[in-house]
Image (cartoon, rainbow, N blue to C red; front, side, top):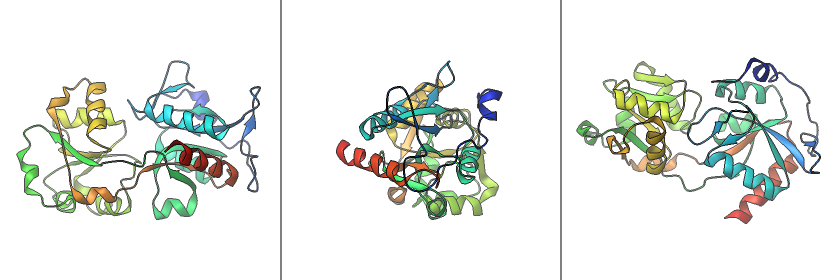
Length: 255
């Protein structure tokens, strides 16, 4: 995932916040409190740049704009594998991570803001001319067919129903330790038959980033995918409730 040894090493717990105040954020010379965000590589939507700390992409832009409205600055740390981010936040590191789907299991262990991208039209993506996909009346029927390999981004939830189904039907679920661009490459090369992404435009952007002609990838709508949740900012329990409330106010003002 490209993080240097020093960055990965710094993921061990440092400062643990207490209570519901803002002690999880550290003041900077700007006068604004700073909250650390751990992030995975989600190219092209959230990627680190050469200095190892700054990030780019629409997810980063959205979260930074919300932080500014909330009165915070963000210190980005990554890219870091999703399972390591979850473990660090579970262990109490006073930090957050962007654009995570809230599931009952996660809600019990972490704090969440309101959705940061509330209008998400989840779609199945596959290769052009994949006529076979028309035979499936539902996403459940597709996911249960062991003859078709589902490319699932490791650690990225698609909601509790789909997560449970893919866990049960694991024999034809291929975990992908990579980015949406990597998923598109695997579909284009035939290593997996299909995947699920957050909308047709995101599929197109991922294809372009992967060097794949977007016309070679098609998006198929299944009504049940509308139940998949939207991404939220997820924080450790050690992060103050005031920070969550500040982001929610910024989200309410941004809509």
